[in-house]
Length: 215
Image 1 (tube, rainbow, N blue to C red):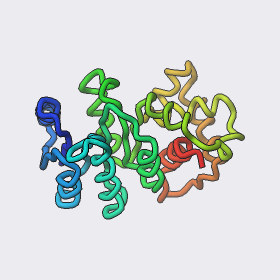
Image 2: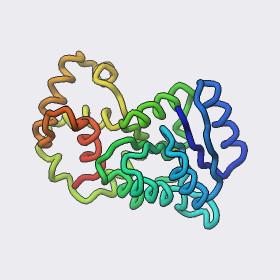
Image 3: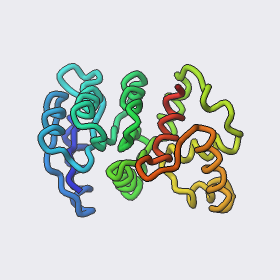
Image 4: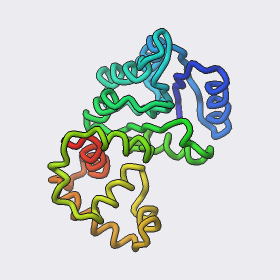
């Protein structure tokens, strides 16, 4: 994959570059400020990018706002936010376009290289990869669950794990259920969320975005 890395801390940036290269990926550009991040994303249109939230010049939310601006110019541009912070307002805006190709992980939640690379690859293919801690903070700040009220407790559990990017097989292992049982729960859930079964819509992504946005 062609990857842009936007991270202002040298050691972390260099470590990510070496890790990505070790897994056979190409880092086409790096950025250390918000404006550099936006310019790199628009110029290179990478297969996926890793973007920190707080970057120079103000060390507030420049990286996340650069990601938002790039997605407005290039809808669906795959971006994995990797940060120490959950910026709830901009995170919700990033998730709200319904295009998928989004991930958000806290740096201290990444425990091994395979986990990180797996998240990147899911985002690159248009999926979602969400840190459970990020999900919890987004849900805690959400307004209402009107579209989710009619899901059963089990369907909520399946959807929460789906938001983390788990497959039906992995969800089944986590909940001690068969893969066919999980498939039945997801089919029921999609129906309750009015997500049509067609070839142009990734229902898993839309279900996750509905869950995280709480419209």
